[in-house]
Amino acid sequence: MSLKRVIYFLLLLFLFLLPWQARVVYAPAFINGQFWEYGSGSWYATEAFLWVIILLSALDRFRQKSFWALVTSREHFQQHWPQLFFLVGVLLYALWQILRSTSPTISYQWLFHLLEGLCLLIIIAEQKGDGRGLLVAFWAGGVGQGILGAWQFFSQAVTHIPGFGIAPQTAARIGSFVVETSTERWLRAYGSFGSPNILGGYLALVFIIGLLLYLKSTLRQKVFFTAGQMVVLTGLVLSFSRGAWVAALTGVAVAVAVVLSKAPARLNDISRSGGKDLPFTPLNDRSKAQAEDSSPHKGALNDILKQLFFCLLIILTLFFTLHPLFATRFTPSTRLEARSLEERAGQYRDALPLIREHWFMGAGPGAYTAALAKKHPSWPVWNIQPAHNIYLLLFAELGVVGFVLFFWWCVFVVRRTLGQRRYWLPVLFTLAALGLFDHWLMSLYVGAMVWWAIFGLGLL
Image (cartoon, rainbow, N blue to C red; front, side):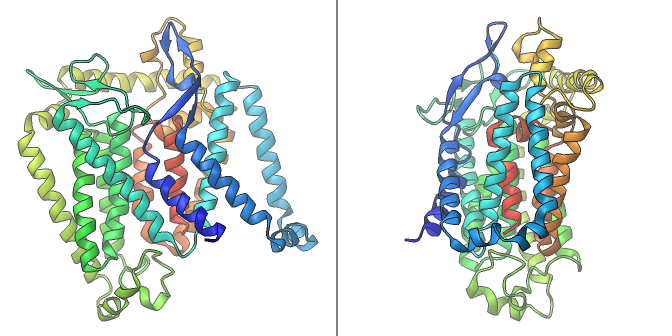
């Protein structure tokens, strides 16, 4: 087996295992005697796995004579010297950000995860011709999380699994995420994550990717993807994450708009494009695509409506079975819901003074909670939380300069993606919507890897 195939299969395994949070906390941090998640240094099992992939990818590239001939040529330098000097400037700026950060140790770890994420993006984007397998691996990881989340909810317990990074939770435990009615407390589904909101956000992305996979599958594959999608949707609903629900609905609405639009890539006309628009088009489906050529959008629209019909059945079944819980989540006046909304509003109020104080250079990459703890030393650790909005959070941490640089790069990648493959637009809208309601995409290792994996998968 060639080294490239080894890298590809390891990448499949990494995307499948990404949700699992097994780790070693090598530098625990505390605030007022309580464990401080966002200030602690951790080394994840999947992170070690990722570095095996990165090193093998570097070895595969460096052993090629054509690579060295290219990068050492005068023509290559003359063509790319502006990008090279820009990259050097960004690295020097990042070093300065670390040195002047509120917490240099935290900023170093945040930028290290950023480097890992960029490497992951590049390695995924290089797997041309194998995009369908990578998408299925990412989706299959979500199916596993849907099964685990449903089991946790209906058993009303999150059982500790040694070596997998899952902490025990019950509805009676103080600090657990629950839905509280007038008479009962129901534990929300966690999956293998530390919060139901992370599970919900992750499954929202998985669900939209599964929808795209379903649209270009054979009949037998459609049955398989439909069954998996129902599991993913069940876990998404039982996370009771309102932000994830909104993000998933956003992705579905954009997917329908893409199918109806005449401008985007033709979802049922792939045979004429040589498969460039959708990397996961099955070869044995070309005859079907040609047969539908006279009506390029009708087949895809029918497929998406069938999928959404089954989704509606799952949602209605869960809604009528668990009606009091849904009613509580949509009633802001109940005790826990009112408290949750007040905490979110308080986080916005906390963020604004930090932004005014560090508006130009920021408090430091990843150092939002460190700056908040410094400003309010008497606060308990559960009040020292990142703002539940990645755009506000990044502005506070990176300042206007870093914020512009970060999203300039994201926009650059998005433009390259949508220039040829607009089918990825629903996934990007789902990702952007999730950023409005939570912080995990930028504050945690798993979030950073999901963020850059989504961008990399869009470049296939």
